[in-house]
Length: 104
Image 1 (cartoon, rainbow, N blue to C red):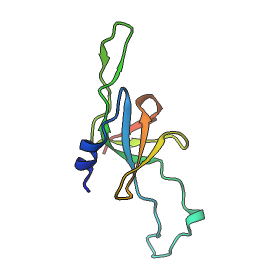
Image 2 (image 1 turned 90 degrees about the vertical axis):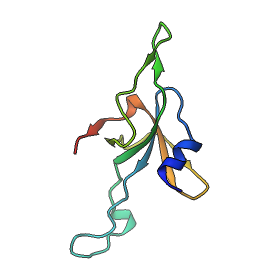
Image 3 (image 1 turned 120 degrees about the vertical axis):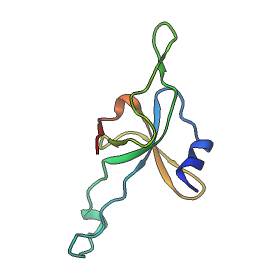
Image 4 (image 1 turned 135 degrees about the vertical axis):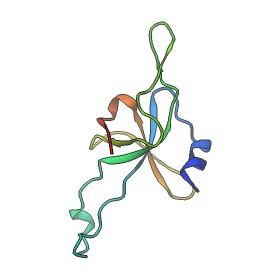
């Protein structure tokens, strides 16, 4: 199932952002396999879907500053893990919990 199909099935609400974490590095450039316990936690991911945004006191939407396809820096802890039928793992974060947007 592609990321586009996931977006059609799972739509975040309010200021929630659906993120697919980047894959952990399992081998060094020299070809040495890194044990799972020694691998660092992946703190980077790609935005798959974005909710419409939160509302202010007047009830108006506050447009999210993140869009689909952005690469973002994530906090070490937090977010809600979402696993879909095809065993793909995604994470839901509030927009305010995302640390930074990485420009490439």
